[in-house]
Amino acid sequence: MARRLGLAPLGAGVAWLRDAWGRVVHRRVKSLLGAVAFGTGLHRVLLREKAVIVLFHRVGERSGKDGLWSTAQAFSGFCDFFEHYFRVISLGELLWPHGKSWVPSVD
Image (tube, rainbow, N blue to C red; front, side, top):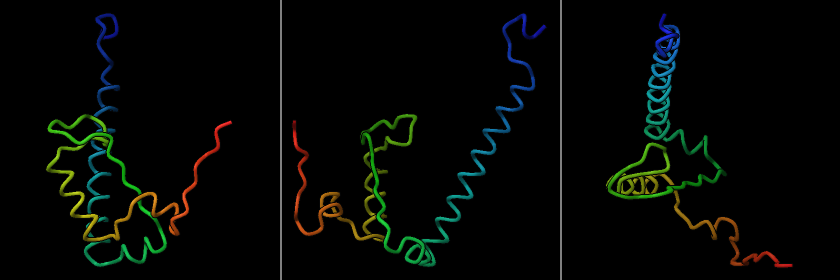
């Protein structure tokens, strides 16, 4: 009957709820692990000799649905976090540490 009325079966609703709950728990566990890693200094061992590249698609007053958007206030907080826990350099400095730039040839 539910299918005839265009409604999703009950099983689909339960599956969606289970998946949503799983995402919330997953996010909380990752946050907790991150807090432990950065709070104890373990991040220095785990990320030694590693580059962490961060990308924000857009920073504005209204954040979007995907993770590449941020409010200006949240972006400022991220910048403070990175400055505190990492040595922040430009992408150019990471790719060309001795000042040698690479320009692709146009043929």
